[in-house]
Image (tube, rainbow, N blue to C red; front, side, top):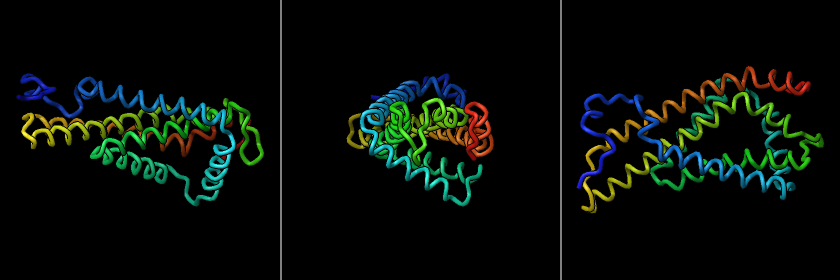
Length: 217
């Protein structure tokens, strides 16, 4: 028995980026669902359990404020490190799912916390203020996170196929092409993370300040 997501015509014209989203639509959908579900749970947790979220947010704020280098390079390195952790976690799929869920939960928890009138360093922050400093780079960073997770899940399917093949249950003839798809998804995620890093380091603050009338640096 042979399992294939590629027909003979697509094999002959295969390109690492062409059609990569269409071929991996299911795992991209799974990634979106996991992120959205964890985000929603985070919103509920932040709104109804504000004490724990507020404490964590204060620690995070102090860590950011004490950081020596908040630059495009440092943000990009951090994001790429996260992307590779999520991708490598696909060797054991639960790791990728866990990291994706954690990121979605944290973002949602912060939003829920501020929706409930939460404060940071004794200063009340509205949801609008929070989103003003998240959305400019988040519109690239969140898709990058989801796509990197899809790359990890594609790696999970490859591992599963190989295990089944070794057990003699199936014969898989396109794992190399699936692996190239996982690399293509990872590269796309890295590109989006690079764009997000440039925006976060150089534009998110000014955009947020303009929208809110505040003067955060």
